[in-house]
Length: 241
Image 1 (cartoon, one colour):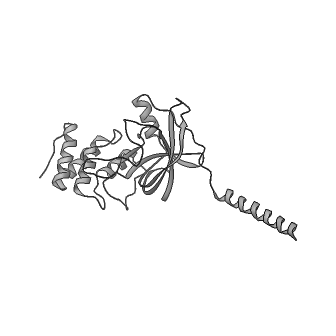
Image 2 (image 1 turned 180 degrees about the horizontal axis):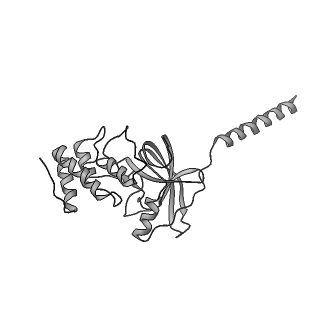
Image 3 (image 1 turned 180 degrees about the vertical axis):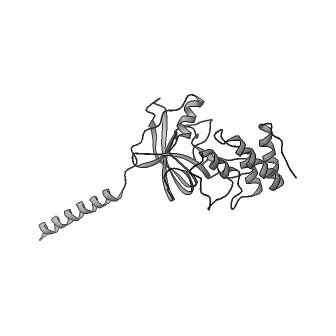
């Protein structure tokens, strides 16, 4: 009887272990991506990313540290974001909550901060709504670059739940729509800070000027001032009522 009980206990233990191993997904076998050394390399790495989404960061957790860079042997940390995807601007029609992996520095740094730690003028808390440049690797999503945070941009213009990017237009048009369209749940000060932040060079200038002129003519005084400031950088006149 005791032998039979022992066999049953052993079988149950093995079955339980198998269930645990099956149910726990191992962390992604990722390696860090090589840092870029010129603007052209940066633009190629970032703006050729196959997946671009607007999302809000729900959490930013350490996975493993330190992790030596395969390129420089510098100590890195592998981290995992959980983001709530709000809009897809390019690529896979992903939605809901998704895990996104990225590598950043393991020690002190004096450049752009790791994901989930930014701030902007008029904000006392980090800007958690971002545009993410992503790719798939080893069955998971990861940022299109590692190290400094060059693969996300602030998108604190509010939520745009009904926005759909036009697949027949270059990505820059969708970026301008998100950056320079007042969405839901954003204050004047927050939106003005976003407008003053500007836009990447991939946004077509005629469309950029059109969006800024519209804000200068129709929005609140703080946003109008930010739009006029942006237009001045391009030596454009600011047409306000």
